[in-house]
Structures are given as C-alpha cells and as structure tokens.
Image 1 (cartoon, rainbow, N blue to C red):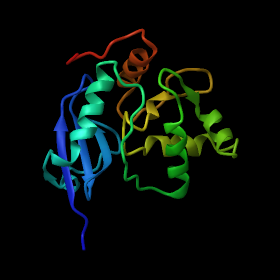
Image 2 (cartoon, rainbow, N blue to C red):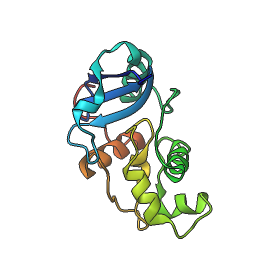
Image 3 (cartoon, one colour):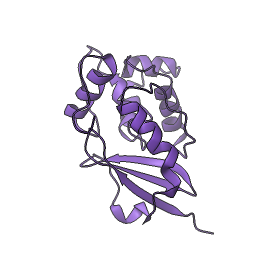
Length: 167
C-alpha cells in the first residue's frame, strides 16, 4: 500500500514553510527557494490536519517561547545522514558546532565534508537545526535556506536578533 503524503504551507518570519507528512508523521520542512527542495508534485495533497502540533511548536519557537522541539519525525536518508541528523538534534538552542566537531562526535574526525553534505540534505529545516552548524573558523558556510536565513536564525537564537516578519 502506498504511503499517504500530505502537505500544508505555513507563514514564518523566514518566508512560508512547506510541511510534508508521510502517513501522518512530519517528514520534511522546506523553505521557499531552498536548495535540495524536491518538486512540489512530491508533497502530496494539501491537508493541514496532520500538522497541528508541528505548527503549534513552530509558532512557539518563532515567538521565543520554545527552544527544543518534541515532535515525531519520519526522517529518510542513508545511515550516515541519519546519524548526522541525530547529532544536529543534540546541538542546544543558541549554540553552534562546527562540521569538524560533529565529525569527531560521530567518531570519524576526517569526515567533516561528508558531515557538511549530510547536513545540507537535512529534510526537516529548523526543527532538525542544521542552521546551528558553522565553519571551522566560526564563519557561516552553506545553508540550504540561504546564508541570510541562517544568519537571522542564529541571531534570533542567540538573543541578538529577532525573526523578521510575523512576530
């Protein structure tokens, strides 16, 4: 039996976000113009019903009331990607890690480029916080949603900026 895929679009301070669920479980969060964004035909039928809790938590996050998401996720990737995404979930709100630090935490200190590639393929932007990963020298490097969004997200989380837009 084919999985049931549904999507909804919600406003955010970082432009609209497209949330996609497979069999009722959040599997993707895409930004407008995001690199590696799949074709919209893969998002399934529009239906906001599977996304109530995700929307509530995203709203609380953007309002500065939530620093850690508690959502069931359906992440699909290679074993290495899943390990990287799990490490991303361990980076505390307001903190950053370098690609090299993540590679070391995975037990493979020479894998910083592979970590970067896996980070860039993260299917659940913001909730799986790939924006918290920075370059070895502390500079902002690669972000599927664009460096401007990454900078704004990091400034928001560090308390030096606010999300532009709704809030």
